[in-house]
Image (cartoon, rainbow, N blue to C red; front, side, top):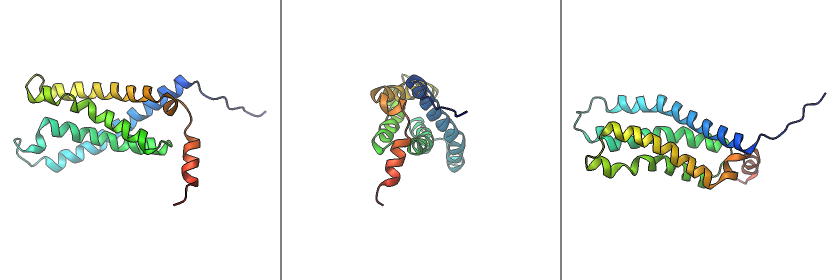
Length: 148
């Protein structure tokens, strides 16, 4: 008996893609962010490396790197990867004026920034539903055939 492969419903593919990116981000944050903390741990608390805005951008970077690598592995092109990365940074950057004026503190920046990051990522995905709800095997195969 041969097993037929039925395509996954588009909504399920979309949700799984989102979940995979979030998992890649969490792994990156758990593995890469502690390296940053080790690197700057000996600096005085007043040093620029301990500022909440700098720290939030570093944390975003530790999540962007594995998420972008996962997207590339999945067959995404550069433009969607850059858009998704920008959405992730934007979750923090839009809050900087509130941090700088004292409306929120460092804890608020981290909490709200992560929430906004996830929302902005979702919005970026909704802007390109076909990019995130289908198989990317075709894109990977096309990239493998490109001349070096």
